[in-house]
Image (cartoon, rainbow over all chains, first blue to last red; front, side, top):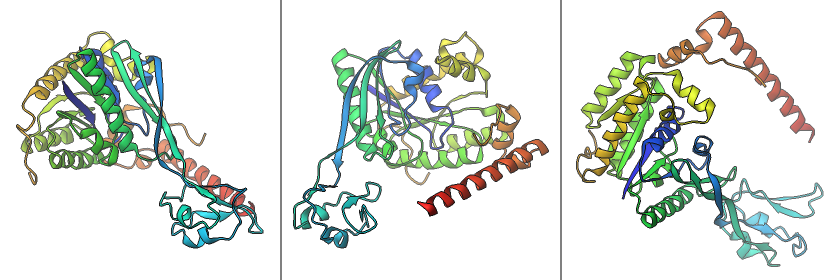
Length: 304
Length: 53
């Protein structure tokens, strides 16, 4: 079983559109949306029969108003300034969930034992059936924490489904950036497919995400999307990737077929055959080949 | 709704070249000036509302 993760550094490069396109071409794959903060692959894949699970992670402090004596010890102890009076006269205390870090000091020091510490409901995750197979995805609540942990949970579920059904691939749509959910999505991946664009921010963020891949010794290849918007910058990106030992598996033009597919809720590879879709098919074949190579091989060393 | 920006390839090319869109042509300059004014008005209104709360 091989894991392929599509990431980007910069947001808006076309990561989800390309993941959907590969999902339509991929045979024997579980598809997994790891962009849990802003998941939208399901909009293109339209899963049916979603099985829903709660994502419970961490705890939150909650003051029981009936037990609280209003002594204010918790206010003095809270270093995050997360406890405030509810009323202007100082009566009644409440915890501001935006400030609470879950350190549990208020729970430990409340003389009336009025502060509870229940599990925190941070979102939901789902397993659904799509026209391309099983989709594992999630929705983190706004402000929900532990996105990296949720990513890890989704990957674990995808691996279990792939093992159970004897599937060859797990194809993941990662998050933009280089933070916690991206790091978590790279864990155990055989290949990172980095989608970039020939813009200043696209080039800048590509360097950062490739550095992340090198750090975690994850092999990475690159797709230069919208390459004709700035051909000179696109060529510069290709040269830099080659110098760093990262294969560029496709350079794709800024083609309106992508927007047409998106507006129809389809993967671009479900549209009529065109040079664009032909390039994508070749890229997907190459991506599969790269993912099947020995994991430790061809990972450029740090500082390259 | 503060502003509507159409799908336009020349805008994407300008962005890819690292240029400021508001300086691209008089129409976009006007659009972004209006957007700025709307954002400032909204922020002022929100600030006044918060001060009364």
